[in-house]
Amino acid sequence: MSNLTACPLDCYDACEILYENGKITPQKNGHTNGFLCPHLNHYENFHQIQNPRYKGVEISMEDALLKLVEILETTPKDKSLFYKSSGNFGLMQDVTTHFFASYGATLTDGSLCDGAGEAGIIEGRGSNKNMPLSEIAKSEVVIVWGRNPHTTSSHLLPLLKDKTIIVIDPVKTKIAKVADLHIQLKPHTDLQLAMFLSRFLFIENSIDEEYLKEFASEYEDFYELTQTLRIKKTLDKIDVSLGQIGDLLAYVKDKRVAIVCGLGVQKYRNGADVMRAIDAFALHLGLFAKEGCGVAYLGNSREGVESPFYTKAKKVSKVDTKFSEFKSVFIQGANPLSQMPDSTRVAMEISSVKNIVYFGLYENESSAMAHLVIPAKNFLAKNDVRVSYSHPKMMPMPKLKECEFGISEYDLSAYLCNEFEIELKTQEEYMEHFLSFSSREIEDIPYAKGFDTDDGEFEYLEELDANKVKSDVLYLITIKSPKSLNSQFHRQNHVYLNKSHGFSNGEMINISSDNGNLKLEVQLNEDLRDDCVLIYSGTKGVNALTCSFHSYEGKNAIYQENRILLSRC
Ligand SMILES: Nc1nc2c(c(=O)[nH]1)N[C@H]1C(S)=C(S)[C@@H](COP(=O)(O)OP(=O)(O)OC[C@H]3O[C@@H](n4cnc5c(=O)[nH]c(N)nc54)[C@H](O)[C@@H]3O)O[C@H]1N2
Ligand SMILES: Nc1nc2c(c(=O)[nH]1)N[C@H]1C(S)=C(S)[C@@H](COP(=O)(O)OP(=O)(O)OC[C@H]3O[C@@H](n4cnc5c(=O)[nH]c(N)nc54)[C@H](O)[C@@H]3O)O[C@H]1N2
Ligand code: SF4
Ligand SMILES: [Mo]
Image (cartoon, rainbow, N blue to C red; front, side, top):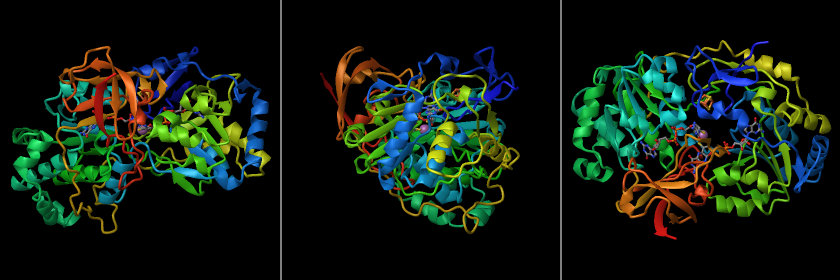
């Protein structure tokens, strides 16, 4: 049996890995380049939940499954909610969705992650096809725009060697420190910057009019829209200089350019518009039609893969879920009590739910609230298969070890389907179905022949709903930590800020927003702007500060819209 598998975590890289002599090791060839990130290096050291429990008392798996059936039987179908997130990215994880949808439970839609940016991309291009890693490798200049690759996509780093690197990020990230140009703009001002970049390309006459006439014929209207922004006043407000814009344009001129975007640009209400304005800049640079050029974002990793599961159901948003409207809530691969925005609201809402079922690997805020806890098996002990955001490979994740505790998603679903007489194919049939997409075609240069909109043309933003840039406010930056995968593994417990606020290292301070507050210990960090306060995703309590409004498009959470106040404890 091959000991080759893939990392199950929700991460850009989707690394192939080996399981040899009871140890996870990196795959020498391919994009992992023989090194693993800290999560996988220490994966098996993290304590997994081993025993099911009901109301705090350990019970057998058999009793846990009987309890689960009893909970479902005593709950009206429309009062059962299935809440799944991305703890494990395997395609087989959705077999539980199949059960709950077929059963008649309510599911969730919306996104805590990349939905706003994706909506903007789809509006502009008609679809969301990602730039593959193999094309990024061929570029000469990489613009890292609101992504933190040393933390969140470390396997991109070898590809960036010897290229010109431009970083657009309010934080002086590791990549910003070695970049040829770092634009440390004010948060939430990327829309304005992207509009200016397009405008100056027009002014310099650096656009390919023939290409635009064919694929984006409204370009003159868009140019007019960019002119509605006053140059000096806006640049001052967003903290970008004309010189920086000139430098950036000089670096990208006549070069193969990859714009590698992350979530940072779109954790805002108008996140879709921001991404669409960045796409427009890429379009004016001609990045959609050339080798080694393009825009990379998270994208739809399941492009071209048909789901074999039944997933039609009533859906409620996973951003502001009204848990109290349900009698039973089944949580899989998620820690909503920490990771959803407005966690105080979430805790209040969910406390009135009669039956909270948690199906996961680790103890956390959600398992602590749950009445019934069912341990899952980890990816090494079950069969699955996954796809990646950045390459077309279908990666089998076969079962590589026995584990006496926990239950796989397939086995749990098989049990429930049997109890409730719902049709389910064998696991082998589902695996075969997924693997049949192994040779699906993914274009190297997406959109080379035009866009996927109705008329094949790029749809521009038509009005500029740029947020008012405020001065004298503190922005909350809440991003991914190198030590945790959201709330999995080693969670952080500090607030990071620079010394201009007058606090010292180790001091406990109060951080408050319109939404709530929390106390954290200060770590001074001079990589941050004076107007930014950083708290990592996964830090306990961080989402007490965030609101549960949706982005205007894409039904996404907006983690960085809250202004922050700091005070001594
Ligand atoms: N180690 C680790 N890796 C992870 C994860 C993890 O938790 N830990 N999580 C995984 C998941 S679920 C995801 S979705 C990905 C996300 O990975 P990334 O896309 O890298 O997302 P973030 O870390 O949220 O933020 C990226 C960058 O955006 C910057 N930023 C913040 N606000 C703004 C802004 O207004 N404008 C601009 N231009 N930049 C801004 C931040 O300073 C940060 O450097 O990472 C995945 N990989
Ligand atoms: N403040 C703030 N909040 C954020 C973010 C942010 O940047 N800042 N980022 C947002 C983003 S991008 C995301 S994607 C979400 C992530 O939100 P969640 O998906 O809720 O994130 P995790 O904290 O990774 O929790 C995943 C859970 O999955 C379980 N799990 C892991 N593997 C398996 C498995 O094989 N089977 C089962 N059944 N369970 C498993 C683990 O027990 C773990 O508790 O958080 C969002 N929340
Ligand atoms: S870099 Fe990402 S995909 Fe690769 S092993 Fe680490 S968490 Fe998994
Ligand atoms: Mo995410």
